[in-house]
Length: 436
Image (cartoon, rainbow, N blue to C red):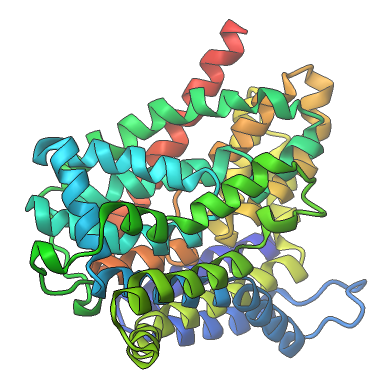
């Protein structure tokens, strides 16, 4: 067992050193670490057809294929929202309603509302230009405003259906989908502590968002109307939320609610009309705006692909299962054990969904045997999927690149926030276990 776990520890340490110390491009660092870890661990004897090149290619393609359309379309929509002035109009409304002193709380609420129906990547890409416009209008520190919104979206991703991990975990543990509103009870205290309160400690943190994410302020008469701005910028929210309410479908047949790619493409078409052509823009100007967004998201896409290769190495070599099994026999409360197994897998694998589903396969029999409330077991595993997001997680790089934060400060802000909300969520789960 040690022969498999040690290479993972070394690989993660090497990944951090390559990126942070020697400034190796993250995509290249992921490939080097993935190849080294696979060569050290080796593939199990029963892994028919598995090979290092195939594993690397599978990992690159799987993650890239899942997120490429969503992220590129999201970047295009965000760019048009910024250039057209819609982000400025939305920011004006939010600043006027919340006031400069409560922007962190207002963006936490906005992040939670947007994050419930949308997958994290979609919600993040939509909210970034609005966040930066709010920062500019309210004259507040970037991280103090952005981090609460990111905490809210992350908690929705980890704890609430229709997101993939919580939805699948309900089935794995035999929980009651109707009781998953308990996730709100767990998420809100975690959001308060890890969002606005923690963000107050980071008000002095330096951030330099890319210039392409913002635009020169326009005069009031040049801005689109408030209704058009909100409706267009948040169109994916309305489409996915409406699809989820209209017809609940299981994860194996998610329909429109599980098709963010199609939703984002539809939103691009609508935005081209409402924020462009209807306001006197030519089609060429709209397309030039979309094209200008692609270079901004390209580095993030490469990092995403590289992280997929590393994750696939851990899956194909069987290390993810070995780690979970090693933790299974620890003398812990079943809910704490479920969280701990998931948290360790999350640190090693990076993907919250993979960590949650892998852990569920290990701890579900133990939870059932111990007579633990399956609904709370789902939330304990969900809390574990949020723990300690670092350089092998796609969201880590999305945060760093979007807000122009250094690697060290990303660890101090994003990684610390993810760990705080994870631990607070676990504490709330344990309290509910005593009360219910």
